[in-house]
Length: 307
Image 1 (cartoon, rainbow, N blue to C red):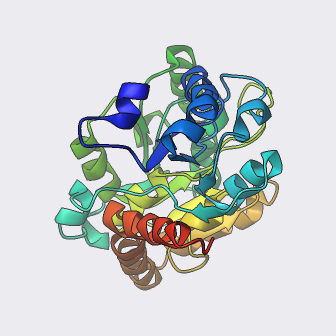
Image 2: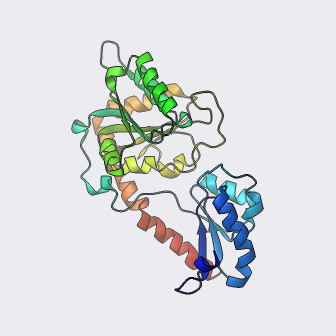
Image 3: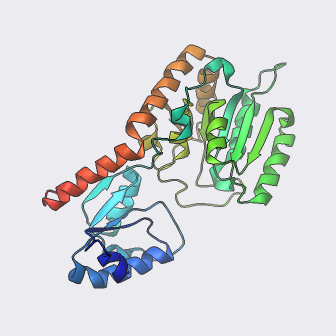
């Protein structure tokens, strides 16, 4: 750690610890507490909701500034220690493939409802299947559904296949496992609506403290011109401009969620407006260059003692 801090280019001014509550971060922060006075660097800390290592309040005292990813993230970090903070949400590269291609028009989008992310019970892609069932009109075909993402829980993935069959959706659901970044952006570009319905209680009835802190897939979808409907997870309102780039809704208000999905799927003109706003928001507010400038401005203020 000393060699990394001093380095061949001279002393380091800031050390950014990416994720609180992991064993590696805990080791860095404990060492930083001992080395700060000698090397005069400042410690920045972000937290992406890792839950691997206990008692984070023991190491938060070594931090000088919090770089939170959402208001909820900021509230958690400042509950551990009183420190100046800035919110820098998760984002996408400026050359994210979805931004480099023209946004696909409504007429060529072959998927109605899409889920993209890790296939794990607490992210609740099973609720996307339930939504498709509830949107199906008598005598009409079911909405076309895409379930795509990392196959990190094969047992749950197999359960999702069984759930699609149970709900009578076998012919209308497409599963794509472990797509590359390029493939993922192409998949999101095919969809009219992206859904992130993570919940504190997962599909198997198990509880989770905080399922999301700042969802990135919402911005990836937005970059492809795909509006999102997101559950009320922490950080949802950081990534969605309500009514303009998507909707944030409570899973307890299921009828409202169904209505929001119908509003997007049954009104192409309204969808086109929201699609354009989502893409514009991703390009202008959530690319790495924009976010890095926001953090750089905060660090400049810190150098001047103004934060």
